[in-house]
Length: 578
Ligand code: DGT
Ligand code: CA
Ligand code: CA
Ligand code: ZN
Image (cartoon, rainbow, N blue to C red; front, side, top):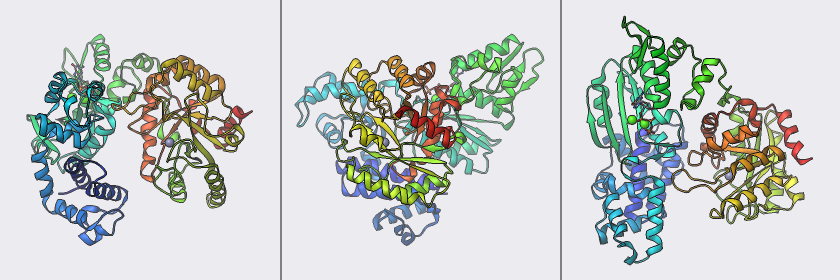
């Protein structure tokens, strides 16, 4: 049985190992796999049943890749990949996650210094051995050391950014659900709570035939190592070095197990105390009476919360940060939901250098989601390579006006993603900026200014009457690049005072503003927008991630401008402009 997810995962692994083999992501064959993966991801065809010539007909898929896809369909793997796996074991591949260590450098470290894993690398750094190699120096040693720290790559504390963990978890759950023995399957733990980084992936399955599920789980192609296998629980490590725990329970206990394994630990401990107060006990099998052993509730999470006189607590709130008290008082926040979203306000077309699809396609995709409004926000001219000139922007405005006639139910706004300069100034003069219907101003450079300078920079941008929102506030890439440092109290106070929205960016590698920043914003009465920052029609689904991240910050629907009806939203946009 070969699934779509398995085909894409296998090709992605081949692509990764080929970057090591070929010395970088720009190599011809690596780019060919890249294009093929993009093509497979965007087609709706059932790729596991296509012939070689049908595969070649897909966008981005060449002849040689098509034959590799057929090989996966027929044999479950690729011969070439098997060879590369021998040559580049998971411990070594895992080093590719360290920024600043390119494939060429990694292979050189292995050949010249016998570095095969993180421990070897750390020992070599400590002995200052890297600085003598071509292209490296004391400065690179320092940078690599800091990157290791930042990634939290030390020992058991290794945390994986959600952007890497979520696709693996979703693909595994989808494959488990295809097994006839499986009734339900969910990922739980920190991933279900939607934390930005994950210690390990926890998967829960409801089945009366645990053995068959275990067999499947421990022999999946992406398994590099089985670190434990029992009757109802197993743990594996994937080829990317991520640990995945699986637990199989009986259907009647599913709710209790889901609750227990979703956590957090502190949320669980607090719930267990409420149970004890009632003469009950709570564990992964259910809520039961201590004396009689009778089960009070176990089937669904909702049943268990209800038995404890609590409203259902969404997973995103389960951190013991006051949610249990609120649930007891019936005062949980009315969290923003995906279905509340009426438009996307940070959205690129191929007018941006990093945009991937033409205006027509991007608008069509937004219309298909049933949005009421959409702001096109290509990069302003200050962003080298990616930005658009005034002339191009004005031409786009005309194009949008013409396209508007085809979409009576979708209000198209001509926006811009302005680039925040070092001092908080933006690409264009105020007149030109006010010519857009909507703007998002974002940081794309000068990440190393100090906290006061960064704060002043953002305050300056918010003081600009033409700036409607601040995009991806910190500019971080989770686990890869730290965000700029800001005095968040001052920034949020000014956002509320100037009527500038703070964006909650749904790109999984960003999830920016952070939940911590969002909560400070709520305290100051800030208005938020939740955006996808899409550069491709594949990326519209990020809206769900933006919403989940907003929930972690306790954001209610009323606080999010793009849940408001079109006229309310437009009036609010106009109000800052005076
Ligand atoms: P992670 O993996 O570090 O990102 O965080 P979690 O929350 O996924 O933690 P993990 O994988 O150690 O355990 C999964 C869930 O199992 C956790 O959220 C709550 C539950 N759990 C684990 N250990 C304990 C415990 O000692 N007591 C209680 N009450 N629950 C626990
Ligand atoms: Ca976990
Ligand atoms: Ca775990
Ligand atoms: Zn953008």
